[in-house]
Image 1 (cartoon, rainbow over the protein chains, first blue to last red):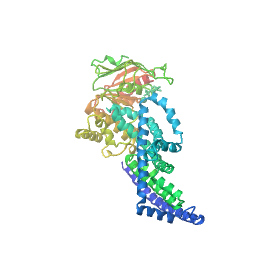
Image 2 (tube, rainbow over the protein chains, first blue to last red):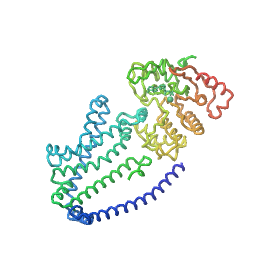
Image 3 (cartoon, rainbow over the protein chains, first blue to last red):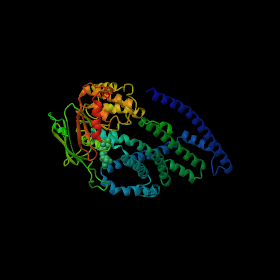
Image 4 (cartoon, rainbow over the protein chains, first blue to last red):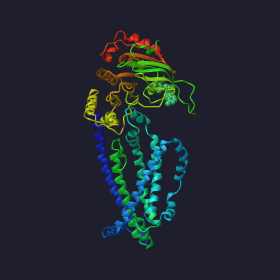
Length: 271
Length: 271
Ligand SMILES: Nc1ncnc2c1ncn2[C@@H]1O[C@H](COP(=O)(O)OP(=O)(O)O)[C@@H](O)[C@H]1O
Ligand SMILES: [Mg+2]
């Protein structure tokens, strides 16, 4: 026993040191990027590239005046609704297909083919069909997320260790219990893997949708600034969107680390 | 050799004329039989060991008895009731917890702690109450796993995982327990310990056990009766009652005067 515990303890100690170094490195790198940005914008002039000082002043202004919140809320709502519905479908449909190999064989080529469709290029069509409001954004994001989740979920269902399923059945588990306690648990790493890319995509798709047509949201805000040749506004919008994505990603990591805490090395290999 | 069905007592578990062909890749039955015309019977409370060369079909036989795989011919009966035949074989793994199966791999659920793995049979059937916990803890204590309740399988040695897998089956008291080379992949010292653990646990519970191994010494030391399986197509080609009194200590069995002859006889049959 002490062996395993010791090993864990030293690993944790090393990890703490390493982490401190990484943090210092990150801060230095960030400062470097800001300095270069400031310098380049001084060279090009603020009509082409706005300096970080001005961009951050604008962000502070948007926060203080409250002009940010409505647009942020709209984009967040679109992304989260699309993400939720797309993920549910992306998991649910592989589950249904899994129950019937014949249906799978018949339909899989179509799912695979549809994956090749450039989804963002469908955005104008969706505006035409569902209007410029929330509905068209929901549809677009749901579709994109669905295809990002479908393949990993499908692969995950096929990768499930059948011996664990059989063992659970022998121990008296019903089909429903097997689904919840074995299949779902085995699938979780795949689903979190899929969400890792689906989450930034959901925000990006929301922004692009708003960009193309819309009357609210961060994409709309950026587009408006662009129309007014307000480069500082464009930069501010991009920084805000990036911050939103990073924040959501950190939240996702938290949830994942909680759900998959049993895994050996996870928290050390990813952010 | 006379088949084991000539036992005077009515058998708890009986196998008659069992045969198995695996389907070839193209979906048709392959020509060769892995098992052919295999008959055996086990009476209540008996510890039967089955030896046979690697690849003989030992695991295949246990899979069919455990209702994890379907026979191609013959019949499997428990207390006179037919579980499966070559014609009628809808799988019901474990036959409503009447047949426990300790497989060659431990098949512990990696996302569960050791205690939650051991409690799994209660969780899916009947519920985890104080009595269940008490029983699980007593068994964990009996095999030296106390203190490791909250470890995950990947944090433990192979021997410890084997023990956990063993008591996960013992804990819910199935009347028949099948064991497929459960101590195959552990070092000699741990193996001896596990064998002795198994014997003392069995003395307390007196379950009916069918224990498969390719280790002749193990088969003699553990069993009331050793059955010898031929190379494929496998059938029972030898039966050896073991008169060594119980309680036994494994290491003492090997130095008994009758051991070498017994070993040599079986060795010659296994081929
Ligand atoms: N699912 C399967 N499909 C085809 N052949 C199999 C399958 N499982 C086992 N076999 C074959 O059956 C024979 C017996 O296998 P097995 O029962 O695992 O032997 P043992 O447990 O005695 O080592 C082997 O030749 C193996 O290749
Ligand atoms: Mg085997």
